[in-house]
Image (tube, rainbow, N blue to C red; front, side, top):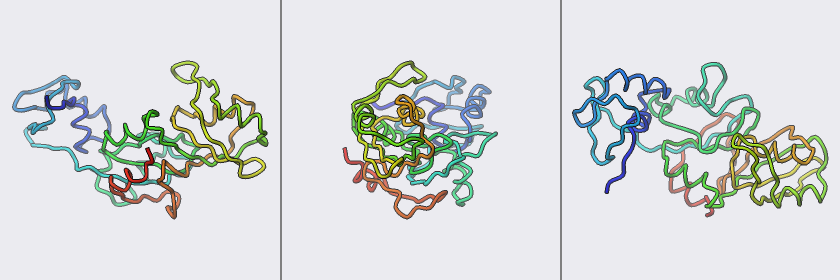
Length: 243
């Protein structure tokens, strides 16, 4: 049996739409046909094997797979927004084609105040590999703290600690911490809960005042300056994910 994809998902991979809401609007307006049949349900599923998709009678197809590394500066959000500076604004200044930009998403978001390494792609399978905790791909962060870390606090965090998430209380998985200064440490985690590292330190009565992701598996920031983006191959990424 061939794999299936929803019409909404497929159209977002064409790069024709900047926002999902725009895509859904076009579908509901009856402007999309799948294999000659008008479809108005955004969640209509069909086989990904040789589909014929037309937008107002114009044939369209998915954008080719692309992979980029981005050094995200602080002050930018990781999702599309009309009211805030976003990582997509950085992509637009790179001269990249709009269709490619529209098709990309961040693999593991960073919050607005956090800097560092991000993978940008339109490859959902790769995203699932990187973000699935079962694959035990560590993401390493450099944290500057409000108060010094002591041995007991480190051990508490490394064993796992309860934090509040949108889904309720959550116990973090085992992590690795290495002190690099009086109030500085490198912390490696496998998960990616929203503001997880900040919440972990808050749970022991400390506070993160600066946070930067420096690596994902074996992928390093290297000489990538703040705000810069570099194209990379899927093969390079897979070689360095270390799982």
